[in-house]
Length: 625
Image 1 (cartoon, one colour):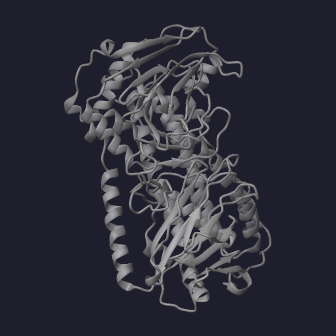
Image 2 (cartoon, helix red, strand yellow; image 1 turned 90 degrees about the vertical axis):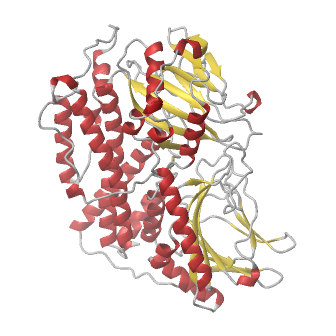
Image 3 (tube, helix red, strand yellow; image 1 turned 180 degrees about the horizontal axis):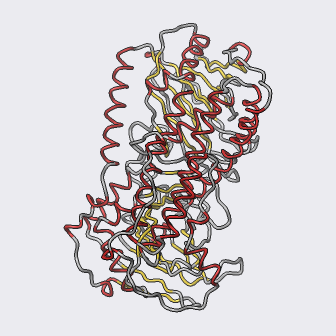
C-alpha cells in the first residue's frame, strides 16, 4: 500500500483535476460577471465583545473570498514547514518556549511575506477598522493544527502595555455545530467573555493581551481544526527583532533538514552484524508468514542521531483514509538514494538477507511515522499479496514501558472475525521485520501517554528494479498532482473576481472533507527545465540486474503482472506536455524493466523533479496571493 500522505495527495489530485476541467469549460463560455472584492468591514462585522476593562474582541465573517482562502491555504500547506513544538517527543507537556498554547503542530511563515500579500494588507486595514489606529505591522504568523487528541492551554500573545493586536483566520471548510473547536476568550478573572465557533472565511480580531484558549474538535470529528494566527504591533523595533529571529530560526531548521542519513549513520562505520544473535523472538502465522523481533541492532549514537534528524524532517499530514490505508496522520519520508548511501541500509540489508529468501532485496519506502493516543490506525498490508516484500520497523521512544501501549499488532487475515499472530511491544532501539503481506496495525499509545509514538520504517521489495519502480510510481502521483495544482492555480489566478470561478472554488472547498499537507523542497525550476526522465540506451553489462531467480510460487499471472509493473497505472495528467512525458516514461520503463541502472536513473530523476514541483506550486501561488 502507498503511504497515507501519498494516498491523501491522490484525493486532492482528483479534486484539482475536476476544478481544472470546470475552469477549462468556462474558457469556452461567455464572459462571467466580475465581482470586485471589497473590505466591507462594517457589513461583515458579526459581533464585538468587551472584557470588563474594555479590551475588545471582534468577529468578522466573509473576511476572505473563496479564491483568496484557497490560495492562502494551499500556500501554507504547500511550503511544508509543519513543526512539532515539543522539546521532548516522549513528554506531551514539555513544549518549546514559543508554543505557550501547547498546540503540537505549527507552521511559521515569513511575517514580512504575509504582510505584503493581499490577505496581510487587508488585515492591516482591518486593524484600523477595529482599533481606529494605523501604523501596525505584522511581526509573527503561525498556522496551527488542532486535532481531537490535543490538550491546548490558554495563553496571551503580548502584555497589555505593548498595545498589540492579534487576528485569527479560520482555514477550515465544512464545520458543524457539534464539531466543537471553539476559541474561548477570558477576562482577568478567568470568566469567559465570549466563545467563537469555527466558520469558513471567518476572522477574529482582538487585543493581544486577552487570554484565549483553542478547544479541540469533537471526538467523532475526523479532521483537525486549522487556523492561522497573526500578531501585529506598532513597534518598529519589535518588528525588526521578530523578523531577524524568524530568519535565524528558518536558517537553523534548513541546516538541520539538510542533514542526510549518511551524516547520522556514515558508511565509514559499516560493520558486519551477527543477525541471529540479535533475534530475540520469532513468530509464524498459520499461512507460514514470518515475523522476527531484534534488539540492540544499532549503536546508542546511531539511535540518538536518527532521533535528532527525525525531529527536523518535513512532515505531511493526511486525514484522508481509505479502507486499505494505515490510518497514520503524520509521516515524513526520506529520499531513496540518501538511505541507500547510509549505514542504515547496510544494517537493514544484512537483516533482510538473513530472514528472507533472496540476496537482492532493495528499499523503496523509508519513513518516520508519528502516532498519538487518540489516533485511529487501521489494519492493512504493505504490498500486493503476490509480492515477496519485507517491512522493518524500529521503535525510537526512549524509556518506553509496557503500560504505554503502542504495540504493533499482526493478524492472520484482514477481517472482522480476526485472529492475532502476535503483538510486538515497543522498546527503545528494538526492530521488528516481517513479511509485508501480513496484515498489521500500529496501535496508538495508551491514553495516559501524552507524547508521540514514533518509528523508523523501511519497506523492501524483491530487487532494485522492482523497488525503484514502486517508489517512482508513488512519486509520480505527487508530481502529477503538483503539476495539476500549479496549472489550476494559474487558471484561478487569471479569473480572480470572476463570480462563476468563485462559486466553483466554493463547491470544491466544501467537497474536501479534510486538508492534506504536503512537504516541500528547496529548489525549483520551470517545467521546461525538467530533466528528461527517460534513457536512450542501456548501460554497460556490468550494471545489469542480478540474475538470481525468485522461488517458484503458485500465483495469479495477471495480479503478478500488475504488481511488477506499477508504472502502467501511474496517474493520468491533463497537461499535454506532461502527458507526452508520461507516455515516454512508461515506454522507456517497459523497454528496460529489469535493468537496474536505467530504472535507478529514472527514479532518481523523477524524485528530483517531484521535489522541484513543490516550489513551482508555491511560486505560482505567490503570484496571486
